Amino acid sequence: MGKWGGVIFSLLFFSPLFLGKIAEASRTTDGSEEWGYVEVRPKAHMFWWLYRSPYRVEDASKPWPIILWLQGGPGASGVGIGNFEEVGPLDTDLKPRNSTWLQIADLLFVDNPVGTGYSFVDDEKLYVKTDEEAGNDLTTLLEKIFNKNESLQKSPLFIVAESYGGKYAVTLALSALRAIEAGKLKLKLGGVVLGDSWISPEDFVFSWGPLLKDVSRLDYNGLHYSDSVAQKIKQQIEQGQYVEATKSWMLLESLISRSSNNVDFYNFLLDSGSDVASFTAIELSKGIALKRYSRYLSSLRSRSSPGGGGGGLDSLMNGPIKEKLKIPENVTWGGQSDNVFTELEGDFMKPRINEVDELLAKGVNVTVYNGQLDLICATKGTEAWIEKLKWEGLHNFLSTDRTNLYCGDKKGTQGFTKSSKNLHMYWILGAGHFVPAEQPCVALKMVGAITQSPAASRLVRRK
Image (tube, rainbow, N blue to C red):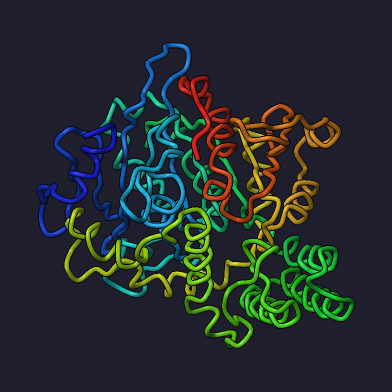
């Protein structure tokens, strides 16, 4: 059946055992997958899915790592998007992904915060309203998964985040460290990886206008309008008016869409594919951002495969995957996701630079990577917030020269990287917001180096 034949077979035919009405923990017969719900608070249920790598290498000097993948949104599903669209073992056609990150680590996907994907709440008052609350819920989930599993405790956990997930990642890392120090959580934190992450909204909104002007998607008028709204956002953030800042962010996205003829916020070389500018601000907050996620990733599949890709992710997750995982009948994948964004509206524009500083000061390895063509979390904005760090090693980091990145048999430079002490950064060329989907070879090589996986040395180019 091949290496992934058993995975596909189990996906279609395996039926897990239940513990009560909601499956607290289920697994495939061969133990290669585990999943279930953790009640992180009364009536607040978070779904997780763990894959154990068939490529595992035993090396006493280099323990086998686990990657916890955190999606953004807020309200985007890691179990769905990160898993099937980016780094998991199967793609949305349920075909093996040759660039899966299982080649270098075990993978843990979580639908975070509660209300995202398959996760759900029984009471609307239980949605999280801050990144810290999300981090606390995730810490509770890790306690449930790791504390009774000595095998997992031997592997360093790397929190890898994308987009808004970066804000969850830094608050989770600090919460997890407190739990570890208090003896409540049994795991070793390997590091935090921030991929195209929304760490400083102010720096990103100020990057949009100049970047788009430089690549001819905005003219001087568009630049002026963009900068004026960005200034308003800056003032609102300084005054603690975060809900108002979120509404101004929506206005700015709409303005840029009109002025640029609908530039794609996930790859500024492309058009978004629909008239986002025609939506009102409230419509933008009610799921348009997630639809852009799906549309852009679908366009990646159509460009990379002769058949143009398979069915939609929503149909997959509410069809065969829901059946395989025995998700409760009344739970719809993504059914509460719009509410997740709405409830985080007051935290959405808050920066998390201080949390990055705190992690660096504690000696935690922090890696930042950015796709060259990303707009929503543009490299220009990422570099701006990094320069605001108060970390004692910042000067040495900024003055360090970069080294070139190559991968497989592709010709030409594919990126750059540099490190100083426990801060590392990767610039990935030719990629937009979703680096693993757009540059899978160099992304896999990068994460192999970050995790110091014992399998990293044997990686070969995989499309």
